[in-house]
Every structure is written in structure tokens, then in C-alpha cells.
Length: 185
Length: 155
Image (cartoon, rainbow over all chains, first blue to last red; front, side):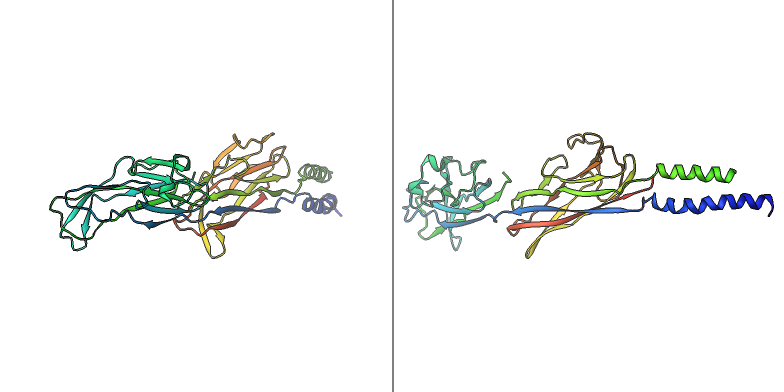
């Protein structure tokens, strides 16, 4: 064997030893996987029901009539949802009541103290007091801090109708809309 | 003789590159807590105990890739809820100690591959996200799987 052949043999023998070491000592292609989770609890859907209308009963031509928010004839809205959660409350109030055939209408007004928010869920306007939530508050700007009570929350609403001296006789009505939504608090 | 000397050098060099296997562990879930129907909620990656957290170990100084498999929805029986991850919802820290409120790499995109080096104390990976419940989202407990794959790049 020539000199160069001996050199090659010397090179290849250590190479056979080195190769397995290379494969063992370089596990860089490995990977690991971790599995985590995202979790959330969606609370009870908020709902509102108009359980009692604002009922003025009989009114006389030319004689305004008022219903206080603690009167048994006050409007009652009942709200249910996740107890302790904050809710935004927004009333859309009519400017007049109308006959069903649209032939006449009667002015209705709401004062700045015509609403109460009862967080006890009692649905009883006559039993409302300041310790139960917000009494005599502005129906156009209901409390931003309103929360849903353990038994629900109610909104009581009074108002005033002003019939004209020539108000046409008949049954007048108008829509009062309360919109409620969680505010995330 | 030149060949022998060369082979021995290679052996020595390879011994110096022996690396320990990397591991990744989920140490905290992405916890949204209570969700109100119609009210989106976000968890930021710096929120301790709420953001998802993964812990990576391996050879100090080794470069790794981080690849999330992210869910588009959270699920409960009979309903789902959209879940979003923005291009800045991830943070990584391989300093010692690691600081979730001031990580060494912040505002990373979890929707693509993230490349970073493991520190002497390993590496922590944090992930935030956002859920968007519907107005009449069904109540209940929702879950989703977040998968993180970690691999050495060889550098």
C-alpha cells in the first residue's frame, strides 16, 4: 500500500467512531408539545319583561292625571340575569298616547323623578324605598351603577297625561321600551 | 496523522454541542372568568393568573421555535363563542428572573412562528386573547385547547 493509502485508512477509522457520536449528541430535531386551555364562563342571559303597564285609567278632558312611581298603577319592568352584575338601563319614552285608529292623540310627560330602580326584585312599587336601590330617579338617565339583584331588579315608572279640553274619547296607548344590557361590571 | 488529529478535534467539538432535550409545559390556562352576553372581554398577556403561561426548558442559549395551534372558538355543549388572538398577544422572557410585566420580547404574533433563545432559567411564554360573546350567548362553561410546539432550530 502506498503512503497515501495508509493516510486514508487512518482517517476513516476514527471517522467510524465519530459518526455514531454525532448522531447521539445532536438531538436538535426533537420537539415537545404542551397543551393548555382557554376557559370562560358565560353567565345567564339578561332579560327584561314589561309585567305591568303604566295605567292612567279614566281621564277627563282638560284634566291632567299623574301616576307616581310608587303607585300600584305604575309601570313595572322586571329584569333577570346574573346576580350582582352591572347592567345599563335605557328607557324610550313616548311623547303622546294615541287612539288605535290614529284619529287623536294625548300628551304624556315624564318628570326627572318619575322612575325607581328596585334591586330587591320585589316587583312592588308601593313597597319601594330608598334602601332598595334608586328611588325617584330620572327615567331619561337611569343609574349607571344599576345592578341585577339576587331576585332580579325592577324598574317602576310613573308619568303624567295631559288631555285637551276637546280630547276625543277612547282608549289611548303608547309604547314604553326598556332596553337592558350587561355592561361588564 | 493529519487525519487523526482532525477526527479528534471533531469529536471534542461535538461533545461540546451535546444539548438536553427541550420541554414545554402549560403552567396556566387562559382564564377569561365570567363573560357577559354581548360584552367582549380581553385578557392581556401581562395579566398574572389570567394569561396563558407556558414554561420551556432546554439548553441555555439554544434557539427554539414556538408554534401555537390556536382555536377560533371556545365550546360548550350546543354552543360556541369566537376567540381571537391579535398579532401582539404573545410575550416571551428568557431572562433570569422572568418578568411577565416586563418581558424581554413583547407584543409577538402568536399566529406565526416565534423564534427565541432559551435562557439560563429556561423561558416563559405568555398569551392573551379576546372572546366575543353574542347578545344571547348560551350560558355555561366554555373551553378550548391551546397547543404550543417547541423545537430546537439547531442554532
